[in-house]
Length: 410
Image (cartoon, rainbow, N blue to C red):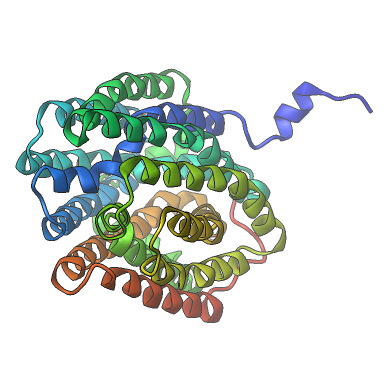
């Protein structure tokens, strides 16, 4: 039988909106997407500390909570594309501001203003879930993330080299300047090529309801099964755990362990390369053999690794531990999104993701603040022990309470 290009494209999940979002994300990650890896230590170099950093994370995530709320409603009522495009152009503004204003107080203000761009998060998740076939949903999500992540194999090395050569303030500034162009390219790709997935009939019905929060929450709760609720709580625990340590890896590695910034950038690049290699095979396994199993194994394997990280004393030891963390945890995000979509009808998917995102934002806000406070007031290792406890609780919840659906929602 001859190979048919048209037939392959028709059956492939990597086409249409999936490839547009992947390519747009790749351009973002050539520049602005890497900024967050270095921001915690950059903020400390500006004169901030981990308590203030945790407070910023708390404030940003509370703002994101409300943005997720309105973003989820808007995704179901007014369409996905316009939200995604507008926030992409909005996000291109912030590399400019980080480059111009190098003061930790202004850093706080810029970070809080930037948080309003998270309005597009529910719409992006919905448009991916809408565009990927149910039987290949985990692979569709994973492929989007992998292609978008490809530039991050190299860009941390560029930033690490700039900071190592020019110093933290000037190196970070130069990185921000070149991020402006790539952010704009990403936004224009979305503007010209992204396709709306919301059905016209659904849009007209929903628009008559406006932003009726009581009605929207009520309808969302009606479709919130026991398994979907348990999956949401487990994800909130994972979000809390990751937020409790996320901003403090680089500070712990550079200040406590004593790694140079370029060695840290090498570790980031190796982590991302490992993630790219493993994410799609892991999603294929989840689609074939069960998403719940993959989620539980992933969280259980991650749990002890942050404690091991605190006992590391060299580049090689940190590299091994953080690579293991990637190997264990890389499957969780795309697989939980796929299982969530399997359990959620298309008509309320935006509102369910809205509730999901709100829970995640609250959990992450608390985790970021608690982690920063514990790092500063108790010991640098304490947030990493909290991570382990939260992950193990999530594992128990996944195993006991979550059931995969026999028939997946389309």
